[in-house]
Image 1 (cartoon, rainbow, N blue to C red):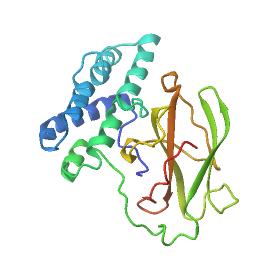
Image 2: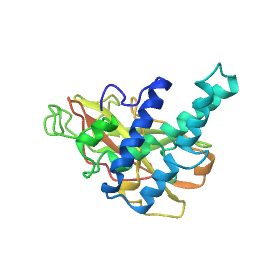
Image 3: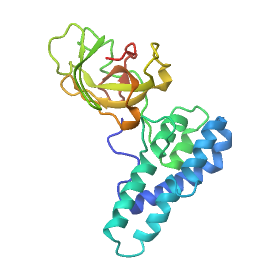
Length: 243
């Protein structure tokens, strides 16, 4: 993953960046082969009053013109977080990052030139000097288990089968955990494209927290090792389970 985020931190620069991305995308989006649901999501993200882009623009117009009140600064932070990040666990939510991940990053109909015009940098999976075939980490299969459960909180352990140490093996960049939700009665995991990146394992520990809306749902997980290298590379996902 690039060491520098492609979304500017400064709010002035962010506002210019998001305007440019939306304008460029609008000029090409009809050629991207998006579904009606994706286009409806684009409308929610960019054109729905008091939502996402429109919410951000309304408070930015106020804050950027004068010394702002504490409540206005709070709304600015909240509006930007909602517009930029959204809730990655909620498939009905959207944001700039979520839309880029879902419909732009790996869409072969979005050209490299278009991505450059949108000022979007995306990671590329490829063979690197520290790949699964060359790493000295002999066993790549992962195993997870829940060690503690509290209300809306789990403490889990994720480790490589056959290794006593919980530290990352040689050549390993990270272990990432992906999550999806179903009804509690469902016994079969959802398809792999339903899973979203949820967090990173640290010294074998993975401590997910949940929202009130996710209570009483079944949480499914899978984990993937990411190997070091100029371009990071995932190994195939572990079989989804409920830890």
